[in-house]
Image (tube, rainbow, N blue to C red; front, side, top):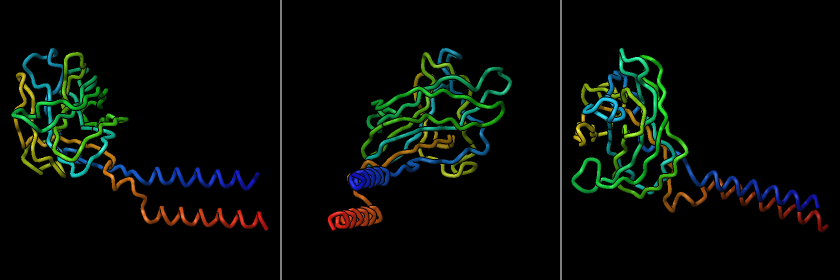
Amino acid sequence: MKNMKLTAVLIAVITSFLITTSAHAFFLVDTGEPINATGWNIQNPSAVPGVENGSAARFTTLNPVIINSVGAWFGSNPGIPGSGSGTLTIALYDDTGAQIPGNTELFADAINVSTASGVSTFNNLTGLSWNINAGTYWIAVEGRLGDTFFGRIAGDFNGPGTNIPSPLANEAQFFGGTYFEYDDYNIGYRIEATDNSPSAAIPEPATMTLLGSSLLGLAGIRRKVKV
């Protein structure tokens, strides 16, 4: 009986290890924090009609991935009490068609943003399971009807790479009902993902070594019991 329990425990441990080592989370996009975070106004379009209410950036993945989280840096509008907090929408678009971003919205979820006064604050939407194939996409942060945020998404306007470590090459800002391409706003984004390609499910050599050693150990235990 003790032998059976030990065998069950070892099998459970090995299975758990295989699962955890087959999927690796990594930063698909990580621009770093904008240093001179003057920002781009973003809010519910009904809050201030005609004022900007969206920001998007283009990125590429070479493999199928599952996006786990999307984040950006946000701030308040100086001199406006109560700004810098509320809800926004984070959306993922394709890169097809004549529009910027593309014609098709693939995913969208709400994020609750909170910032410290006068400080650029990172906010992260977690718990996502956005499954996408290899290709090019647009990530967007938008103030939609029903959202409550009024403030800024942090960025630096001094040209590519000036005050942000790794800016995305193509960006777009939304105002007047349309996205327009602006490649020098340097908005800060971070996207965490898990590799979803077929090769990601193949156990690493170290994992296989552990599995082999464990099976040999089980065989040894069985021999001792039979003797």
